[in-house]
Length: 174
Image 1 (tube, helix red, strand yellow):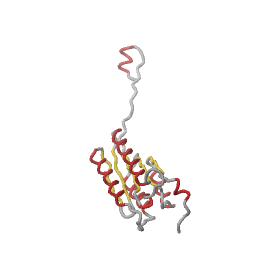
Image 2: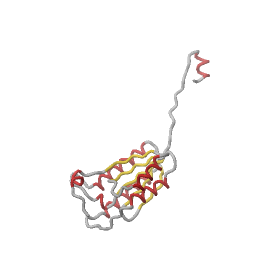
Image 3: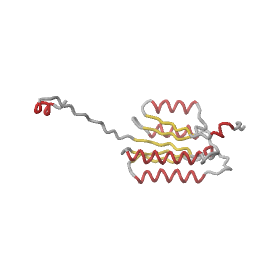
C-alpha cells in the first residue's frame, strides 16, 4: 500500500513490484563417445550441442549469468558463470571442440565421467542456481542419484534426456 498516494487521492493505491533475480545457470553438456550415435536426423551429440546453444542464448536474453561444464570421456571443461557474449562464445567453442573430437572407433569410454561431472557441478553451484544437464545419462548409478539429490536440495535442476529410438531397441553389448 502506498500511503502517500492513498492520502493524496483518498483512494487506496497499491504498488506491485516484481523481484528481479539474477541467478547463475550452469549447463552440463555431454559430448562422450556414447553420444556419437544417431539414426534419425543427427547424432545425439549434435542434438545436445543444439539444445545447449539455445539454452546459452536464452539465459543471456533474460540477463542471467551462464556457465558450463562441457565433458567428454577424457576431460571436463569448466566455464564459470558470467553475463557476457564472450562467455557464451567460449561455451559454444568448447562444445564444438569436443564434438569434433568424437570418432566412431573410440574405445576409451569412461563410465564414471558422469559422476565426476556431477561432483564438479555440485562444487561449482551454490544456492539458487539452475543446472541444466543435457545427456543420454549413460553411466548413471547410485552415486549420481545421491549427488543429484544434494544439488536439488538448494538449486533447480533440469535434465534434458537425449535419446535415439533405434538405440533403445538395440541388444545390449557385453
